[in-house]
Each structure stands twice: as structure tokens, then as C-alpha cells.
Image (tube, rainbow, N blue to C red):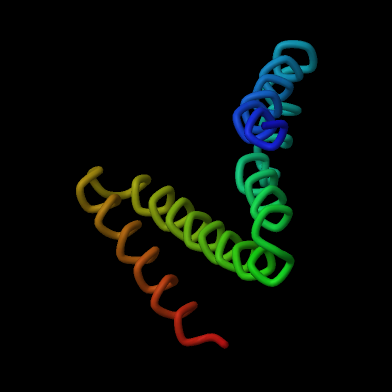
Length: 108
């Protein structure tokens, strides 16, 4: 029962702390904190605790790959959005994400 309560409260509490830090110290601090794996980190920690270290390790690697794809999407979209309309930018961003995901699939 304690693990269930931890699962239900850990991520919302971390997000609440980031929100309060943003109110106290401004958007720069909140942005820096939000850049940390505040959602994936606690989830992977709980998965490793519940399912074992090997499963947690695999989940952490998958989370890192997902974050890499998200970063590539953001960079591609932001660069394209400065010169093109949003449909072109979103298509380019998704294409960059897809290429990143396919590239990461071939890694061991």
C-alpha cells in the first residue's frame, strides 16, 4: 500500500516543488529544474524497485532514448518554425524524431 501511495504522489510532488521554485526564484530556475528528468526519473526508480534492477536499467535506457528524440524534435521544430509555417515545422520535427527513433533502434 505504501508503494501505491508513493507512486501516486511522487511525480506530482516533484512538479509542485518546481512550480513553487518558479514562483520564488523565477522562470529561469523553474526551467532549469524542469529540464531534469523529473517525470521519468521517479518512474524509473519505482520500476527498478518493483520489477528489479535489470528491468530498471532497461527502462532507464529507453527513457534516455525518448528524451533524445524529444530534444531532436524540439531543435528541429524551433529551427524550422523560424523560417516556415507551422505545418512544415511540425512535419520536419516529427521527421527528425522518427529518424532519431529509428537510429536508436539499431544501437545495441
